[in-house]
Image (cartoon, rainbow, N blue to C red; front, side, top):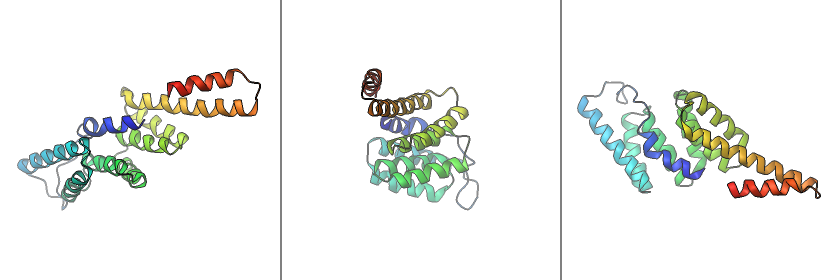
Length: 181
């Protein structure tokens, strides 16, 4: 599931909807300012993809100062936080995006990835189910939900094998699921 988080950086962050082009003080941005912002956002995404997180963080901070509610820069900030080993900060970013833009599936998906890595499978499952409801045709949360179910299955097969040492099917199923994961 970690791989999925990285795949979503540019493909999803730049595909997120554009919110009204307003500056921090709610003035509408000029066409030129919008183009400059879009270019800077693309540069930030490129920095994230090339794992230049400190530079990306600086560029994203500048973008956030210009347009604090803009979801694409915020999404990338969540990815940077996660990749730099700050999962709590990443969770806060994705939850904030979910609060402001509950119709976007991407923050739910990335939140679920982080929760799953923490072993919080039920919370991850819930987030992925919401992502699927908001974008039923998007394959990524479906696949991630399958991974969650496989991990939940593995935990249950392990418990069955632990409680019944004579059980021959639970260890075999556990081995299959572990091979799958």
